[in-house]
Image (cartoon, helix red, strand yellow):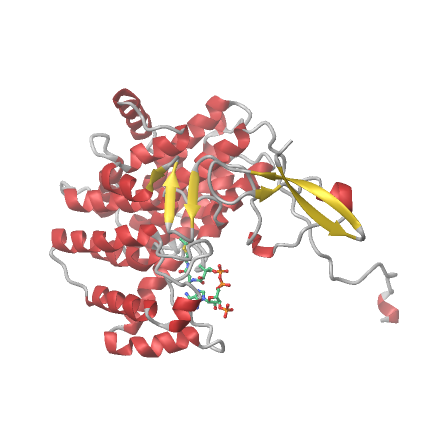
Length: 428
Ligand code: ACO
C-alpha cells in the first residue's frame, strides 16, 4: 500500500488512488484501476502527463536540464566514457570491469558482418532512396535472416539479438550510404573500434587504406553517446509498444526507426542544418525568428524546443564544444556555425522563446559536426538511429524482462457517430 493517496471526485463519489514514488523525479498517480472502479478513462493525447512504464535506465529533469543514464550524468559519460561502455551500462545497469568491457567489445565486433544475402537486398532500392527508408527495410528484414534469436521469451535469444542489432547497425547505415554514392560496400574490420570501423565502412574505399583520424573518431563516438538513450521518447515508446505484442526485436527496432525519421523527432538534425544553410548569413536571422513566431507560418526553428527540456538540453552543450574540436582537427571553417551561434543568442534573448522556454536541443549543432566530418544531410537521422539502437534494445529488454509486462493498448475518447442502421446504396 503506497503511503500517499490521490483523491478523485467523479459523479458524486470519491475514489482513492495510490501515488507511487520513483527514486527521483515526479510522483505518479497509479490509475491502473481507474476504469475498473469508475468506468472513466483519462485523456492525455501526446502523453504530456502520462508515465507509460516503470524504467531504471534513463532519468531526465527537463526543468534543470539534467540527463542521467543509470545515474551517471551525460556530461561525464560524454567526457570520460566510450559508446561501447555506455552501451554496456545501459544494457546491464552498471559500468563494466576491464574484462567485461573487453568481452562486450569482442562480442559486438564479432557480430558486425551482415548475412551475405543482405547485400543483394540493397540492390532492390533506388540509388536515391533516403537512408532511413533503407534502414527501415533492412533492419525489419533482419528478422528473416536471424531466426535463431527471435524467441523473445528466452533471455539468451534476447541478448544475442540485442548484440546483433547494436553490432550490425553501423554496417547497415554505412552500406546505405555506399549504395547511394555507388561505391562498393566495405566489410567491417575487427581491429578497429566500433566507431572507427563505422567511419571506415562509410568513407573508406577498397582501393586504398583508410586512416581513422582520432579526433574525428572521438567526436563521432561522443555523438553516439549523446544519442544513446532518452527515456520514453516517441521512437522508444514505439519500440516498446511494438514489442509489447511479442513482436521480434528486429521488427520492433524497424518500427522505432520509422518513428525516429519524422522531422519533429530524429529528422530534426537534418532539418536544422538545412534551415541554417537556408538562413545563410547572420543578417537574415531576424527574418527567420519572426517567421518562427508567426502563428500563421508553419515554420519552426528546427533544433529548438523540446517536449521535456524547458532548459538548455545538456546534450546541446556538449555538441557545441564538439563542433569546435572537429573544426580544429579537420582544419575546416563553416560559416553556418557562426550563423548557428548568433541564432541561438538572438533566440535565447527573444521574449517569445524565453516565455515558451525554447532552448537549443541535441539536433541544433549535431548537423554542423556531421557535415564537417563529411556526411550528407540525409545520413544524419540514420546516424541517430544507429546510436539510439542501444537505448531501444535496452528499453525493449527491460520491458520484456518485467513479469508484469502486458500488451500496450491505449483507449480513446470516441467522438464519431453513435450506432445507426446501414442504408442500402440505392437509398442513399
Ligand atoms: N520554433 C518556434 N516555436 C516553437 C518551437 C520552435 N522550434 N517549438 C515549440 N514552439 C512553440 C509552439 O508553437 C507552441 O506555441 P503555442 O503555445 O503558442 O501554441 C509552444 O512553443 C509549445 O510547443 P509544442 O509544439 O506544443 O510543444 P511540444 O512539446 O509538443 O513539441 C517539439 C516539442 C516537437 C520538439 C517542438 O519544440 C518542435 O517542433 N521543435 C522543432 C523540431 C525539433 O527540433 N525537434 C527535435 C526534438 S529533440 C529530438 O527528438 C531528438
